[in-house]
Length: 289
Figure 1: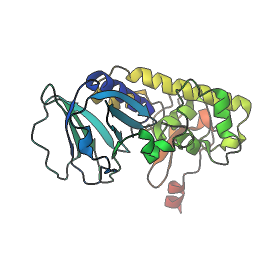
Figure 2: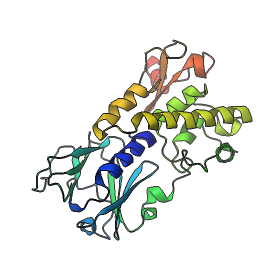
Figure 3: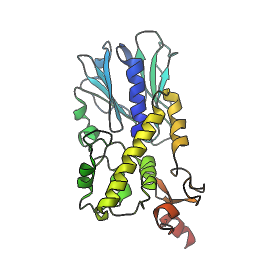
Figure 4: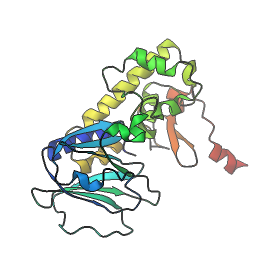
């Protein structure tokens, strides 16, 4: 899933390549992709893209004097910038194409929103104000905002009786962090993903805050200036433990372990994060019975 660093890089890319250019046509291809109907999607056609912004994991294209085109790439969505788009509308089918945005000049320039797999979650909104998008309206503070201080972070964790891994991923608590970067942040902080957020002391909160800001900032800097098509590969190469089950930890050399859930998994290093004790993996427990 694209998370804060990748979406930030996509926003920078679109700001550079699309700002000031007119939207000629918008073609929704997947039936489920469009989540709003008023104003209609055609309301952005013929309007110039005035600015591009990121809200958590949402991308926001604001048209001059008109509505915003907002989209969320969900688990398997992506943005593909193209300079060879055909003038004819795309035909609906079983392929990954969900929506196409064609710019007026030069001809053939624009981007496709695609989504792999059968579980479709990519969402597009045409709204007068991005706050009308339910997912944006409930977002917590942005962790890269200057106002997101250690004191603010500590306040968000006070009294919370949930595991810190889930708290970091909760978009209503902190905007933009997903499964991958929560694993990375906790590894840098040398903290178990199963720790209760409300049990952390001042030192642990300070270390977690530094890990959070540092990990996200470094990921954004690595992605800055890359073409949209290169961002996925950059994310994979920059990860230390997430998605690296069975490989050596880059810090201590221990084997990266996994805890699997129904539709996701987390990765961690037992030596760095849990005092050498493996975390309970319910999937493996069921297999051993």
